[in-house]
Length: 203
Image (cartoon, rainbow, N blue to C red; front, side, top):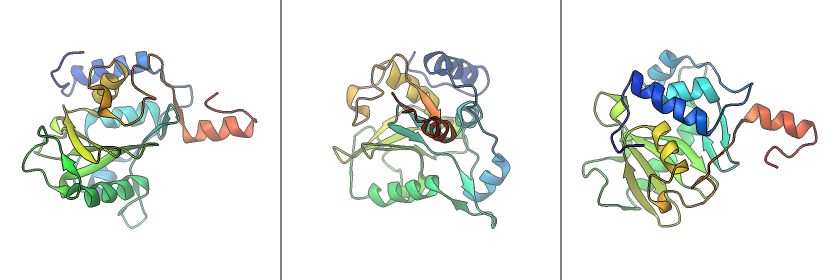
């Protein structure tokens, strides 16, 4: 994959097709989200590639390692659940952690929204700069090194780049996704179903 970021429209379709080729969604994957309600709760529109990811895959885990966070809104219209909790954690870590020279110099903690967290306690976020969410860079907090690093826009493209080794090897603290030619995504519901059948979902 090239180094240019994917934009809306055909670019989003292309990168989602690539992800679906690498990591096919299982039959019951995907979920519906009221994105207008989410936008009201967060004060921003979420990127198209992420919304399409949620529609295709839903809420769940990649390789029993990376949880892709999905937005929840309580009856009062306020953000709730794991995404807001991990976002608050990311913002708390911002000032005390080191930053790679590639991180935008004028970035602030309040511009962070977390979209992923993994079992090695890395945090994967957007840096919500500008009016176009398709241009939000990906920021990764590497827990092992206690450092923030910035990557080109697009959470789906970032995942593809990790799978195809098109980002530096240390972009995530663990190795579960690196050079993984056939990663699996399971929704939380599918994991529960398999466990109820007495099966290890990740065996």
